Amino acid sequence: MQTLILPLVVRAQGEEGEEPALNPLLPHLAEIALSLVVFGILFFLVRKFVVPAFEATYAERTTAIEGGLAAAETKQAEADAKLAELEKQLADARHEAARIREEAREQGAQIIAEMREQAQAESTRITEHGKAQIEAERQQAVTSLRTEVGALATTLAGRIVGESLDDDERSSRVVDRFLADLEAIESTGAGTSGSGVS
Amino acid sequence: MSGIGSALLPQGSIRTEGFTPPGPADFDLPPIGGDFGTFHAFGQEFVLGVTKPMLQLVLSAVLIFGFFYLASRKRAMVPGKLQFVGEEAYGFVRNSLGRDIIGTHDYQRFVPYLFTLFTFILLNNLFASIPFIQFPTFSRSGMVYGLALMSWIIYNVVGMKKHGIGGYFKLQSVPAGITGPILLLLVPLEFMSNIIVRPVTLALRLFANMFAGHLLLILFALGGEYLIVEMSLAYAPVGVLAWVLFLAVAFLEILIQFLQAYVFVLLNAMYIQGALADEH
Image (cartoon, rainbow over all chains, first blue to last red):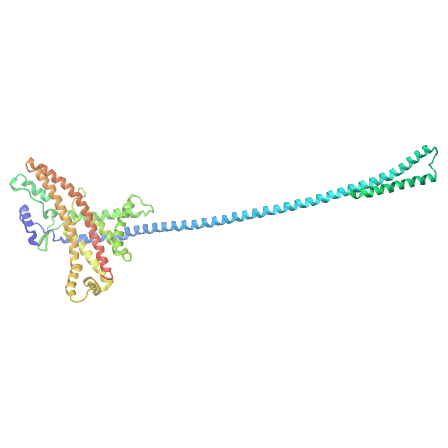
């Protein structure tokens, strides 16, 4: 190695006088020691302060990202659950509404039927009542008519005959008989047409 | 650089002396604040005192720790610019150099080491291109030897801790699935390449790249200057070309500075991974 460097040494000697240049491959002992010491100090400082801080940052960041993902997943699951619940509630509500509608329809139909029945009954009752009233009035009219017709007929007959028949027993019988005959005729007439009325 | 500058000046007037190319002497910066004497080692004479690369080394540590301490302190979920840059650099070493090479099981405990090593080498290399500093700290071989020695100790100790001393040497020197007399040839080779040569190549690769890159830049700068200032006008365009090339090489150097820091840490990670591996 010394021979390799020799020309350089000679050159350096030429420049700087008697002092030969150092072989660059031969180390300065202080430099070996210094490089190790400085590196060692830097190494311990870096290991104590820099690397833990960077590693902690990395770890925190990883945790934050993973935590964020987990939180997002939880939120998503919650949202899904809530949505399913809401959908179920909606379906329930629809179902309920349909049921209520159905029930209302049934009730309505029932009410209508009842009302119809009631109205029917009422109309029947009214009809019956009217009929009975008419019958009673007719009866009354017939009775009053009978007396009136008797009196009228007697008066008329008396006028025709020319004598009073009022207090005559016989005349009263004649009238009664006549009226009975009349009634008989009437009742047969009523018998043929009366079935439609009653 | 100042050494060669002062060496050039008195010679400038003498044309026949010619151009003095920059050499290894340019990397022997004088101690700051005067001479404190010399000492001898490896048959050479070294100066005592604090030199510029030594200051750079300390400055780099201060800058790196200051920057990453500020960047990592806030620990915001959504990082600001500073934290983002810090996290990107840290994440780059942690994931592509640590986790992808050493494996998810073991990498975490080596991340501080790899991260410090990468930023430390990178910034010290970049010093070569930062104005007013402009000297690669790791063009001083001693600085690199320290780091290479440390790398060597770390991956070997890690391996020995995991496999035991015997198991580790077996792992590193006996290739899996090979039996018979060929082992006589392979075992020394594997041992050489895995235990002995690694720290040397690790150190020389970084040192030589930084050294040669800086030397190249000095050569283009001083050569261009010499051609323009000292030679006749006809040579001046060549000097300008040299300066243009200086710019190009300077950009190339930035790439190399990053690459060498990356490779040094990459190899560290691979050596550690190899030492931890269950089957070679």
